Image 1 (cartoon, rainbow, N blue to C red):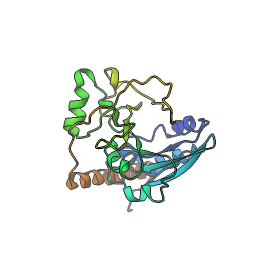
Image 2 (image 1 turned 135 degrees about the vertical axis):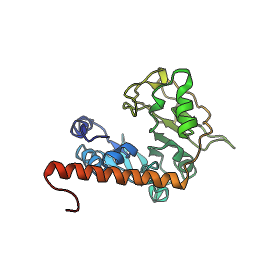
Image 3 (image 1 turned 135 degrees about the horizontal axis):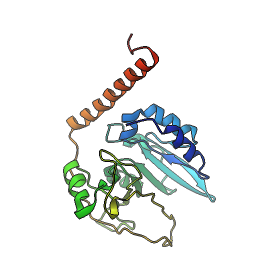
Image 4 (image 1 turned 120 degrees about the vertical axis):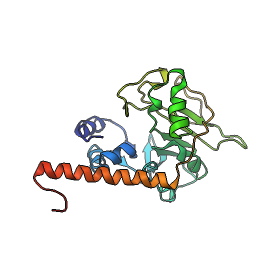
Length: 241
């Protein structure tokens, strides 16, 4: 987990000619959330930390709900949807896709998520075993829920993107493990973009225990302590000295 490419990230994002909104994930917290947040802000990105914002595109208003990282225990659902208007459309951003179920029930019918990297190795459905059954997520990659909710079914949809990075192993295999930048058309009519995913059923998954959540929080604190000590040695001082 490194801050090595934050300047390059700021340069790329700053060149985009569109409103840019985002949320942080667990790797951002492990690398240093404050530094990542500052780099994104320099690039003109609006980072949503458990809050929502409204953007205007072609005279149409769109609410975006940003839920902070649930994996590291930083999500505050109630704060994220506070003040949300029922008369305007809304999209949710959550690093952890499993937060979608709650967001659907609170006025956010479409959620965009990440975290899983699609499992990275998707040959012979290994991603469903490694991510969905061992690690615990119910939503691994692609589209889940329902774009047009029906009585008794899911109340919204969530799309889990594969992203462009990698974790643990610096490689990807299989069609669904490829790096991905997802593009969506929003509107009342059927879009013209070719779709490569249909809605799919979630995996059984398992909810993290309170003890596991606390361990994840402690990991963030430990990594922050290590960073401070490294920076202190580099600059000739040690934290607490």
